[in-house]
Amino acid sequence: MNVSGPLPQRGYIWQREWTPAVIDSLRRAKQRMNGVVLLGAEIRFVGKNPEIVKPSIDWEAVHREAQQCSLALRVASFAGPFRADDAPARVIIDVTKQLLDDARTHDVKIEEFQFDFDCAQKKLAGYHTWLSTLRPIVRPIGFVITVLPAWLDEPEFLSLVRETDGYVLQVNWVPVSGGGRGAS
Image (cartoon, one colour):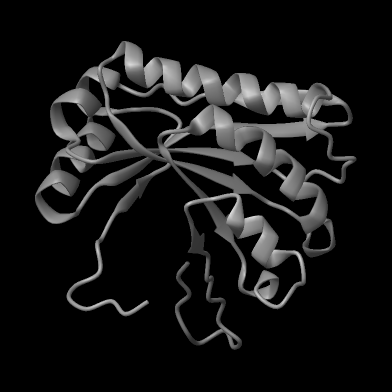
């Protein structure tokens, strides 16, 4: 696939509290970017118990200001097992449905749903189970996952991304010496 021309630029708004400054950033993103990705929720499994954090999204501001909008669900590391119908999978499915329903209720068109799972490299085969379960729930919206560079050479990587419409490669930079500035 050959791509020419400028790459689309999107900003991530991963704030839990939607303050006036966050709403202002949404306004500015509309002028400078091709869209935004909103943090819809974060899930962390503590033992078998899920902890769910849902940001206080100002849906009216999103409806008013965001021309192109995506939602992200962040899931912290999980050791497994990965099943399509167990309690962790049902939590992820329910939160996904709630997020998409929230957007529809507020007349916000979601173009893409990003699933950001902090998956251990050796658990990619299990992760595939979750993706194949989520895919029909997200349709017809674009379904995208975040991936790490270390995953690219894993045998499971191709089957993992085949469950999606695309992926975002997360690259982080950490300075080797104390003299430089780091960014991610």
